[in-house]
Length: 313
Length: 314
Image (cartoon, rainbow over all chains, first blue to last red; front, side, top):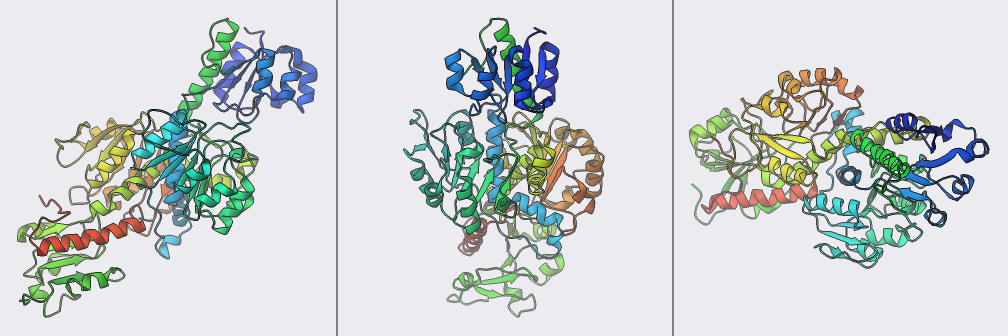
């Protein structure tokens, strides 16, 4: 398999990079001054692309790589992959579900607790020496607060299970109602937002869910409401979110993702009622290794003509 | 002796700056006095202790008729419990009002340390994400072994929540709890040796002073995390700072310190600690619940009904 050309779209994981280098002829996209430079030189050598939530395989890339047989994504999200085009051309697509579910759900709870209980702000307060001058303020209790989840898939369900441990009433919105849960279903996001205090985005990013958190939803959530986003930045109308937070129309936000990573709106950097993370949802040593192994396993299965481990297309 | 138609007498023991916000509500049901030197003091049967106002044996000497102390904090380490035991004075604490918030905060601190939440938030706010790229990886919570030190009100709430995160729970306590199925370790070093995480939420007493020391931290190991929402003096702070600086443990989340509000300045240099100004239980909701609990304990005492939150003085 050492002659098989594999394109790695970004330096997403040293272990993955090392293993790909051992098993395949590895091309590093970022070694080239531009995408066009790369395509010009090596377009016919690439039979597999390993993408991430940062750079996947869009239409331009798919068209530029005529020998591409498989896209193996180092993520569970598929929004950076042109799935329609892949289907048309018979290109296989795999992702990394399940192995990252727990970490992402844990992060959602971490964001809720940090946002409501002002943990990061407290840490800043102590480090600045302010505690010597006076006590920190009271913060908002989490246990028992109503949690609304957009998307009750693997990650959404794992978030619900954890929030139940805090006695939170759970409600949700998804494309269709899920049988077998005790959670209250709302047929629209606005209704969900009107009936919960903490709104968590945990669905896939598709054309339908782009800006699913918009001004109407934010207004429904209100000045005591909190938005938690562990999905994709594009799930949220970011300028609307920012102005709502700055103006106090929304109580707070815990955000792991942004519309234009790694750029974060400057206004947010000055706010105390937000927690801002650099897209670390699946960012643990343990989980990134599991994700890498899944990518490697899928590629191996494909080139050995075995069934793919986690196919999407 | 108070006449039958007079309101029952309560001594409100509050050293500045501590005070209660609901005096009006108490005054409608009780006759409040606020000084040990009051002529009524010898007749007082109940003392309401506000915040950590110390109740020493000297305080108790002023109150020969005292039968009950109603505390307003989860901890009772500021009360001379030995003297209370000797005189048959019952003590109530505020554990039930604060345990949910205490547990929530302990878990918030834990996930913060493991997943580097506060450190990564600092990173983003400093504009380092576009400059330096991805933040270093954290450590997964799921599957980790959590040793809870003190399985009281707060400890039980912590255990209940962490089960949903896929953690394995064990505990150390003065006595094994027969109604609990989690593994019990009588020896704190053994608990540490079999845990990835220690959460300290027990009472501070003579026996538990500096319970967590270098030996315990060594047993916990280099990947270990310590969370303290009990009292600062439960941990040997000097040794904790040393262990953190030398990488003998992975990290710590601390809401309490030995000499508040002073925090060892070495901790400010560390990225693997999360620091909080003794506010784990401080929400408007818990203080509203505290009011109900205090009024409830006082009314229970005066109507000879069981106290709502008695402390076991054994």
